[in-house]
Amino acid sequence: MLAFTFPGQGSQRPGMGRPWTEHDSWDLVEEASDVSGRDVGRLLLDADAEELKDTRNAQLTTFVSSLMVLDAVERFGVEPSFCAGHSLGEYTALTATGALGFDDGVRLVVERAEAMHEAGQSNPGTMSAILGLDDELVEVACRRADSDVWVANFNAPGQVVIAGSAEGVARAVEIAKELGAKKAISLPVSGAFHTPFMTPARERLRVAIGAAQPRDTEVPIVSNVDAIAHDHGDEWASLLSAQLSSPVRWKQCLLTIADLGVTGLAELGPGGVLTGMAKRTLEGVRTISVATPDELDKFIEWVNNAAPTGLQRHEGEHLFVVERLVVSPASGVFTPIATVQAGDRISIGQSLGSIGDTPVVSVFEGILQSFIAVEGERVTLRQPIAWLRTI
Image (cartoon, rainbow, N blue to C red; front, side, top):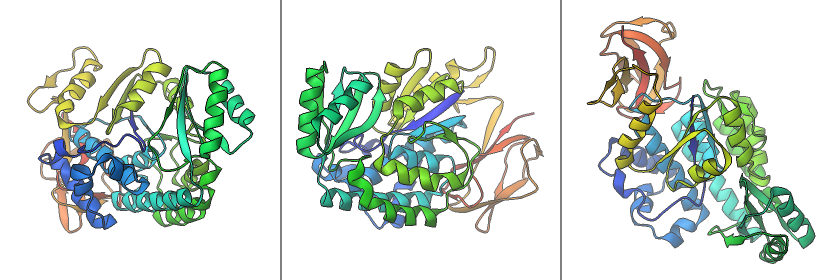
């Protein structure tokens, strides 16, 4: 089984959108700009590191970049069994699985970033990664600091992030080194995320989540808060609210993903940080990171190498020869035909639904395996809608 993971704030890089400008998935950037009222393209192409450090820019650009990679991957007909995202990446995972529509996801990320930025202005703080020390001893260091400092991320064995006031973090770093930490690295962020310093942002975020109304999903998402896989939309209001000021249990999320039987972990989005964490945490799970169009061929080969022996592949399309995608003929909101279900035999020219007034017609004959888009999801031109297995 395959899982997709999505990076959080801090993975953004200047110019990270440049490799995508000629790719069809760049359409998402224009849509995100329209929805957010921000020039996302300019941020992805021209913003420097200091501008991208701003929480409001870092979250929006990382979210859109990750969804561009996902869009490109989905065009190959590859689907995960589970998803997870680190902090902000959890919102990407919700959008990737259809729990949030694209427009709702953009609006929610913008609102979250604004709320966190304001909380950071009210309660200035910082974050630091502690390397080479057990989780329990990092927590001891925070308690012994006797100040406003807490564990913010359990990332991987020997890699824990603390956050709080500048004085509290500095004192906890000193104690952690006394307890045997090998190194401490200050992180380029503008607040003490996933700590009580973010509590002022929770009410504003709750209102935004309520407006977005997350939906149930076929692909479960492993939550940062409890490291449990969830597929019911009504559970995410409390989970996302709690995530804001409680630690990201990423190491535990990875262990849950492995316990669920996942054997391949693909990180989709800028950076590649999560892949390194997975390698430190899990044994026997294949990993890969995809951040640019040039890495898509490598990804498909990685997927092919895990395919059952003897399964033929179509090298020209990079698709298994027995699989075919039905893609969107337009941009807009997808409405499936209620009577068309997984397992149905689909004929050439048969309609599976509509994008506004435009019918979504299959140009292949085959057995419908599943819908990739969900009812009410806003899709872009040529975005995968459903996949068939040929007869």
